[in-house]
Length: 31
Image (tube, rainbow, N blue to C red; front, side, top):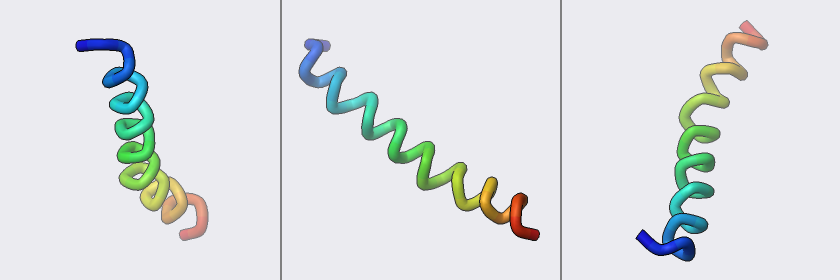
C-alpha cells in the first residue's frame, strides 16, 4: 500500500467513525 492511498484511506475511516459514533454521543448528551 502506497502512502497516497493511505492518506485518502485514513480520513475516510475518521469520517465514518464520526458519522457513526457522534449521533450516539449526541443522543446521550441531550437525553
